[in-house]
Image 1 (tube, rainbow, N blue to C red):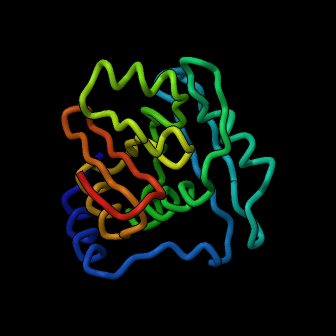
Image 2 (tube, rainbow, N blue to C red):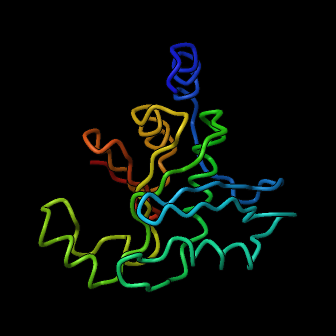
Length: 172
């Protein structure tokens, strides 16, 4: 959970320029819980300087549109953003997935229910994910994501999650 001392150290981290270095060596591991299916996955998606094709396939299947069963190739840079968020915050927690890939049918259904769903959502392209991190306050997660300037960042405090995507840098 949120600890004041962690918050103070994160404030100093936010003052540093951030970017995602996809060429950085080392394994990259992510853990997820899908809030709609209750499925869990822990996967090393990057190893020995390269993305692991089998791991990316596994992530594609995990982050499917749970309403339609449709699967798309997720943008690996999205996983790099999540990995950087976790590394920067010092988290050892699990990403709880609210929404990942959305089929056109699902996106349109959600648009009819809410004004906050974009017609040309990055979710349609496998370039976006809505998440929270079990051991990091969502406000801090948002602030770190914004400081990275690696794509779009949305903050949904009432629902307690953030949106990150690999599109152009923007915020809401």
